[in-house]
Length: 459
Image (cartoon, rainbow, N blue to C red):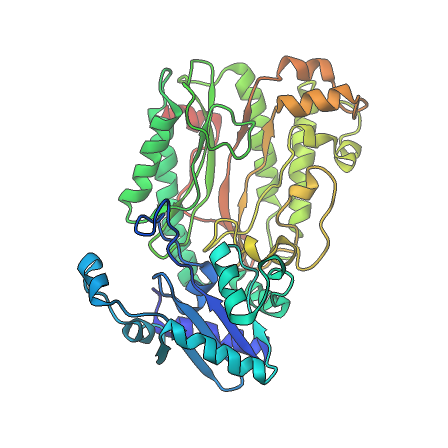
């Protein structure tokens, strides 16, 4: 945990922003894999962690704004629990670590909520992403699970987004710890991959680095020779000579701040000429995006610069034709780059995505509905303290190619004969993590090899 004053100040600012009513922040509980005593790895809710700091299951934070009251509800262990789990601090002892002096058992919460409802007080809660939380809200407040997102508090969402989006120095230190471990995860993969191995062997070694650091993974590992599938969590392929391997993986510290990096490297000692051409186009888009990073620049402009750079590179290689600015405006580039250039990150690797991209990444502005651009998670103007990824790539997605070619889509911009020759190429991207500072942007953590020369030097 951070110092007690950090959490006290965070809750104070939150209460000031929301203004009135009750703020209810349920933490997560254990989630059973197949029976109660065999749960999945526990991960605390990030907003609960941000304001109450306690990384234990079955706790609920309660802030009564008008009465300046903060409470943590939770149950102390019974003797039966202690037999299996050992002696643990009481709820009161834990609460005192984050500046909360009042605690009650969970069965007392309903009476507090009932009193607030009788007085017609607003009860602010966030859109729930777990079924258990939806059930809790139904039992406490009477909100139907199907309506819980719609009845959540937009005022609370905006207040939390406008706090958590700006990372403090102590948060940046944690994120950099995570990124440094993440770099080691990627170096492990780059150095070990050889023809004949299974993807799962590389994924296992990458996972080991995260666990050996005292933390865990920040998201499920993507380790694949099929980089054209953007979120590919299958690890059963054998890697062969001539393949390129894409790793997207990150470490999470004990405090749950995460890193998120991607790397692409040849299974052979060196890239083929064909691989070099496509890899360098993706890397040029990556560097063009980085060059624009500074306060006041809309991230959508950063993304569109990456799109244009990639389109121009693909035109030079013969995949595209015509005016590339017009091609990007029309969305033709999305055949090769159908996703976004980056997303916010922090306690969540896609930070606060459960609260809504329209608030976290767009500041309430509407999102585009155009294929490709609609997948951009971050578009708002950049401000000091924002932490995010840069990760443009080039992908050859056979099903998308087949569909657009059959429709004769964008024939004025796309050389379909050339594209057909690369249909089974796969995909590649690099990904780095940045923070906006007063005069520009700063790379977080130690650098990961990304030029062809540097990647091959690690092979």
